[in-house]
Image (tube, rainbow, N blue to C red):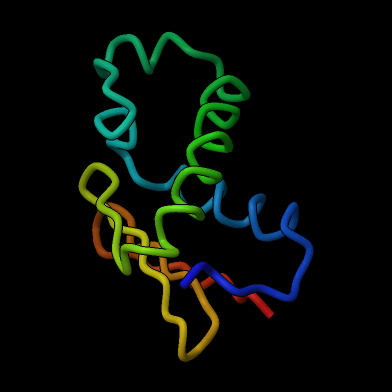
Length: 97
């Protein structure tokens, strides 16, 4: 099926990276210990999450929901959005068109 989008991918990726960075235990998905994750500078953490967004974007084309730590990333193909639920239930909606 694939994720369909009309916006610039780089803009979507920036928003997705920012939303995923709000998941407090994103390091679990990256198979890192919290102490190791905390040793990374913020820009290094964002770089790791940015790389993760590429993988998630691809995965959402076949799996409607991906769990990332205690959060989730869901593709709503009918509304053309990606919904990121972070720790504490905060939801970020990213428009794909």
